[in-house]
Length: 127
Image (cartoon, rainbow, N blue to C red; front, side, top):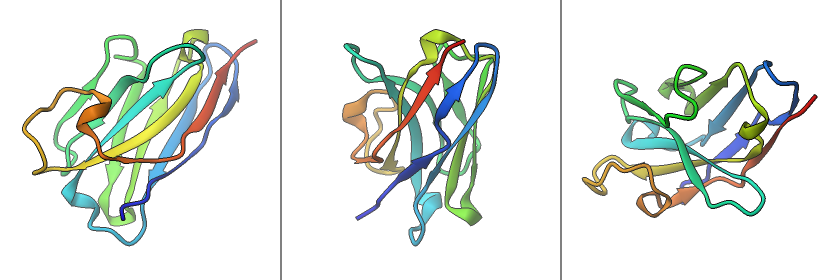
């Protein structure tokens, strides 16, 4: 089974930065589309960003566009989410998710379109 492990969460002040990592050693990483979702207390799981299996295409939710950057290093089996200019509304548990690039043609950033999930890493933005 493809097991995803997130890291890098923590406490940051508004306007600060954090960098999250999603890793899955031992798998053919370049066969998987990787996405980041987040979920706060009392909120549903929302899509944040997505990167294609080759890294050639990226997508960002409007709420993070211009502030967050997704990237991947397939040689290291790792995907990153660089979060800059963070805001209190970014506070959430962030989850890494994956799907095989040939699994579906539905490219909507929705939880049901991803079948592998990490355990989540908590991010708190507060002064």
